[in-house]
Image 1 (tube, helix red, strand yellow):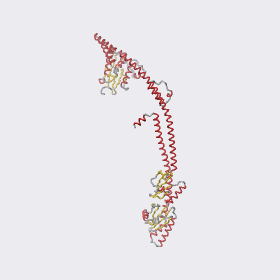
Image 2 (cartoon, helix red, strand yellow):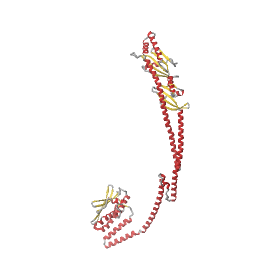
Image 3 (tube, rainbow, N blue to C red):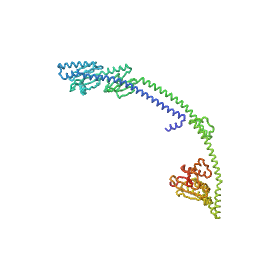
Image 4 (cartoon, rainbow, N blue to C red):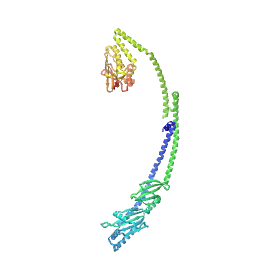
Length: 579
């Protein structure tokens, strides 16, 4: 399996596409050939329905004929003359004048009733005293069919009729009925009648009629499991069963065997010649298979041509890849074949050409940046001595001021030195609030000496905020901005208050002043360009962006004005240790 997977993986794309197409075509063809059986099945169902309707009509005719026998039997048992004379024969002794006269009348009535029958083998009547009468329309199998068992069966039915089937070399169908006294209160049995139906003649009568109508039937008819009629030996070999149809081979011929059960319980088995239909169906299947084969070949040819057309363009793209990988030269000449194509091939070519140009541009920019970085490193090496010289100079000025007793100069020099060390030596981007606040304190030491009583600073940063993380040089530029917009434009004392507290959604550091104030939407105006970012406006915008870059866009600066005070709020995440 692994070898097969590896083989398929290494096949060319054209071969893979052809295999996929071949598989899809094979599946569609198999489905189409399988679908041919659906109309064939529907045709067989329709043929069965048609045959069942024909058999139902045939069965109704036979059933109607049997119902005529039942009607005749009722007319016989209800005949007044027969009833009267059978009663006399039962109530009088044999040999008397009345008995002989009644016997003669009964024989005459039996002969008369014989004129009513058709498709009959015999009509028999046996009195309660054992006297037999009969009319025979053709030679009977047995002269005495009114056996004791049948007479007892008729008596048990209390005058109702029943059909009796006798199995044998020649199966027989009898109508058995007892004749009971209808005018007397006792309803005693007077006689038993037995009508043997010539069932084959009856069936042939209607079968011949259907043959003349163009619907010949090969059929077998069963009752109580006994075959009463079979048109030929082939049909007689079939057995009854559940209603439906089956296709079968009979003597090398395709036949459709249809089984049907009538309302009277008789079961019909018929054969329909399926040969012509089978041949037409086979021809249709062959034509369908040829059409599918032709369509498959045509689809393969057309699809192969289309795939070749597509793969040629991919081959051109692959050559571009190879050329770019080998030389690194971008595609600068526009390939007009793919500029106006809206499909994926045109998009691939355009994007690859653009990618090579962008790669070339980015490569050149990286080289330029690398060159500038090297120059900057050289400049830094050259300027390493400058901060040390500046620190040493400030230290000398601080010592001179101390010796001269000028505390103001000494304080300013000391604060400036610490401020320079913090800003030049500490290269960290993120510091603690306490560290950033210490730089601000050194800056304010200088400004307090400069402004004297005109500047007042208050601190209110909670201890738990001191360990929170903050971008370096965040508080000092905001304090410088407050001095620039407040202290330098006020005659009264400028009060700057630096506070910090923990809020439910983070930590807020606030730089508050009592100056003339700023617009609360100053940051939005700086971002949109409505206000030019001159001076410390650049610092506010940069601080806002640095906080967002360091944490997320949920944090940053917020400006609030009210009650004659301006508040710059630095909203930070709660980064206290242990949180």
